[in-house]
Length: 387
Ligand SMILES: Cc1ncc(COP(=O)(O)O)c(C=O)c1O
Image (cartoon, rainbow, N blue to C red; front, side):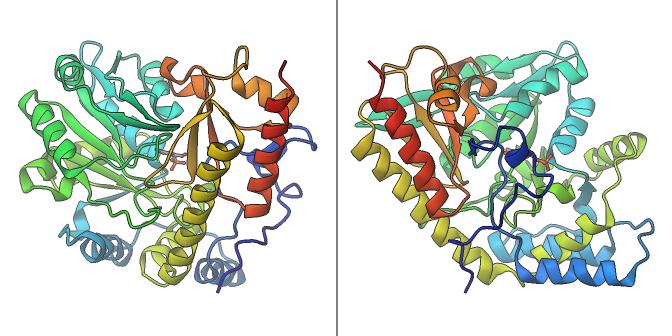
């Protein structure tokens, strides 16, 4: 049994999460968790260090087989090992896809409020960003988000690629099969490449399940690049290793060529961690983690309902990210600034996920219950002091 209640002191590491703000600020922003990676991963890395030689290495056929086998095991999705392309991370993975699918005339379509790095693609590549914002529904104090199909159908026509975030960061939404099928159908009809960022797909909360977009049909798989990684699930994001699963041979060749041109090599430590993470050896740990994160999510939702009148939030299906709306409170201006100053809590500024995030924050609950409680208590106290 892993005791997720005990988290190491990260201030004595180089963690960006823990070092960006002064010592009296509790960091609840960037998406990594405060838990050590599972034992088998750490053991594998120790073994590599003990060997001592840190030479060049490539993803082995065995690693690609392991990734393909995990897709089959989790989803009954049969992919050939050669369809698996290793990438230095998921951000590089979708940036490469944009280089082959987008032009100054056909941009990248996305569904804000969405992961801040999605918004950088346009700047990095000099292509247009096409937004099809998700539409918000409020039930009591719970927020949920849906697709506006008219907007989606209209915007897709200007795109070369649709960058889907599923499960969605920061909203924690897992898109339904029906939604996925309809989005795919519209993209395929309009000759738009689907790039499905599924980095959070194994961080399922409660009884939720997940199906990769490309698993839905061979026709969809032909038009889709699926991006997966062990980084979020097993908390090894600093090792920078991810995978693009591309069943379509022509598309894969173009993608691989671009990866090669850019010299996007993965570090050997990242490759080792991925091999162990996807082998199934860490799945017991993962089940315990999911139970812990589910309890944290439930605690967050109940805490906000009971102690923060007027605050609305998502009840995420997946991820360790909460999305909190302060537009109905007395906070004047940015809630991120407000809590940083008055509660000494550093959340993520909602605005970085798109203009729809104005008045919101993203809160990382991938930490011990004690630290989560401390952060929420500090926020509650700050709210009660507003005149
Ligand atoms: C949706 C999503 N994609 C990609 C990433 C980052 O991926 P990487 O660090 O592998 O580039 C994150 C990290 O928070 C994320 O939430």
